[in-house]
Image 1 (cartoon, rainbow, N blue to C red):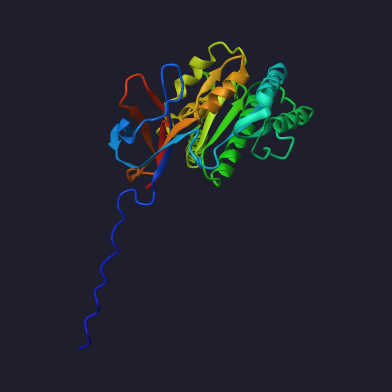
Image 2 (tube, helix red, strand yellow):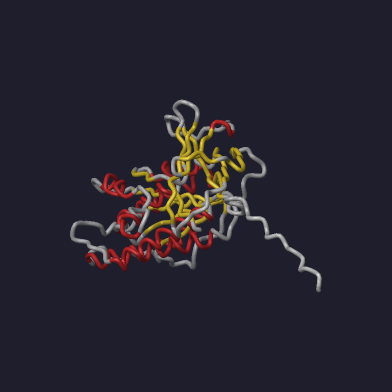
Length: 331
């Protein structure tokens, strides 16, 4: 008889979450909204679907860190598609003021993009504010508004163009290392939600896939989204806040779930409604002066696109942590 075949042991099963660690950029602020440095790992508790998760790594980043977490940068997008002509002009004026202040020396590398795209994409990151201001001046002649009086279908067109732009940003930035802040100047695209708007099952499935893909791309690219709006839109804040909770299934999707403001808050950014755009941009940039990088191993998912709620608690009185509010896990 021949020799018995050699028994080969099965490969060891990977540990839960092995190779799938997730990175979170966390900004901790005090009562005045100022970033708080100097915290330690033991000050943080990460909750995933209300369950504490062990941190795989922890890093505190402050303005004086050398080298910083590269390439820390901010991208400013001037939205002339969804803003009125007067509002878009005011945004550019205020942005130019920010770029030129202090002799044009920016606190971190910044790039500029206009919507609609008339210059072949965003400028290269630079800390030369005067150079960006000059680029903004040259782009003004090409900026134009898509007419806002074209009714519901015109709103759909503007929303599709805007979301497509955000998708392209997320896709490109996912190939670049480091943390990025995307500052979107403008009111954002129409929410297209109301009693007279009914979505078919096909529409809901398509929107849900958009939400999952864009949310995941922004997270993996480490993009924190901010929306600065100088328009006087009564009641808009209360309206978008109805959609901030993460969508768990396609059957629950509404058009408001893909609003710019919703993506901003869910990414760990903010929605700032103020007339002083220059000051608002400074507030967004201040978030990069002190923040914390947390990594953890998410639990294995049983089903595709399984939504997980995220929350970071700080064990110090009066401090608030701001980071991504959730993610979609895959088997």
